[in-house]
Length: 426
Image (cartoon, rainbow, N blue to C red; front, side, top):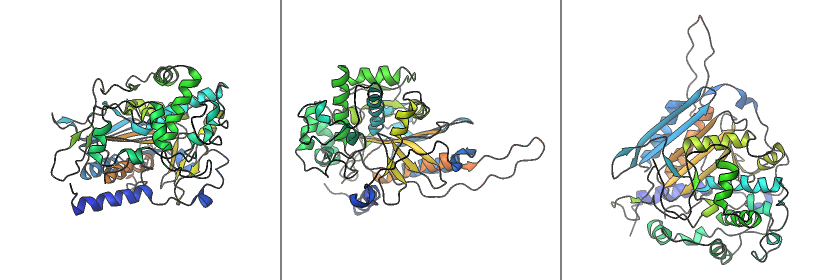
């Protein structure tokens, strides 16, 4: 099976966008940022309304890049605004619905981090204690700490790099398979480590599989119960669940699609799958409203005390331009207008997700495209962040004079997508 030259060039460009700007460990990761980001930088405190025209263009670009459908939902002081384009079920021609559930991929990592940090706050886990003290003999290096897992600085190889050799065959090989945590860790340990513990940032799903193991070992309960008790119920997230290893998304939901390896063939519906290859690194189901509630509630202090939240939002750069950062299971993007947004990205077969909020929790955006093996679509979806959070300044209020024209839409390029959670289509 062969890809067309145009498709291969597009995929190569997407891969370049995903990996460009990674700096040598000796320069970028010599010392982490010592203070968390300020809660309300000047650019963030200005009244800004989302640029819905620019947001629609970002979604259209996502469809043009190959996604069957896409959605974005913004929540702010001026209310909720949303936009959908395309379809969520190609078999029935169902239009994309902003209320639909979908697989959120690695946004799940932030859920796992919150649970673990709650255990830290309770004195049941220590961030700087070696993992092997909680899970004896699991890892070959006693220097790897819990903090190294949450910051992707453990040096543990990402097992997904070897698991998915080709988009569709690789997916079909794991679609209905149920892995144990140990099997996934063993896959990682069979590969060379990326670095010595603590030396450099290297995104790896293995880290958050081990986080799940620690949660279950310390609490003595399935991680599903801990998500539910510590996050889902307190925030009243009605469309969020961890259903591993069930393959079904219940209720109103979007279907996920993979592009076939051979041009001209139909899209592959990837909706029903165990996501057992990811588990606590990426198996949560949610919808746009719940994701915004989760992210804004998190940074607003509803899930963690201020001390733990400051630790979570203390960041180190992950790119040479220092516009993308990672803390404890949480990303930060610095947008072109100076606004900082916190959250996570997600990739699971059939879905790209962005879920971000400002540090004060007052403005949030959740966006999704129902494809996952076309990096150009992921990059285009990232444009919703600039449109929503930079947008255009709110027009001054006046009871007598007509309002002046709003400023021109932001035209700065979208932030490059974060490190891939799954290998892109080859």
